[in-house]
Figure 1 (cartoon, rainbow, N blue to C red):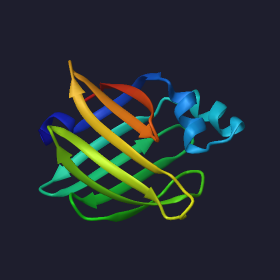
Figure 2 (cartoon, one colour):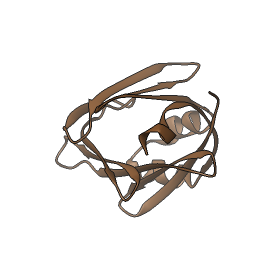
Figure 3 (cartoon, one colour):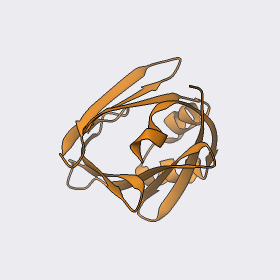
Length: 136
């Protein structure tokens, strides 16, 4: 299953992204900015070690982790999350818990369907889909 995810992908479409960003707590100005950015996502895997590189014209972010091992992530808006990643039902699933006790938990499911990489983000029942196409 991992081999389907490996490669370079570019965002082509987002569905319900603004409502999701509101639910996560992103302010209007930052929401307007991120909605017009179409990042490139590169996924590589070496046994159990994953590397995900997200690149935009503004910034490149790299997250490295091992499946099943909790790791910390810094979000672009300054929030910090504890994340655990694993495979469930043929999908790559991440649970991201804000380290702030009043923060929110985000569930992310990533999978390939009809040669497209689909990332479903869920925050307290508000779900968005981001659809990527392979570039390499």
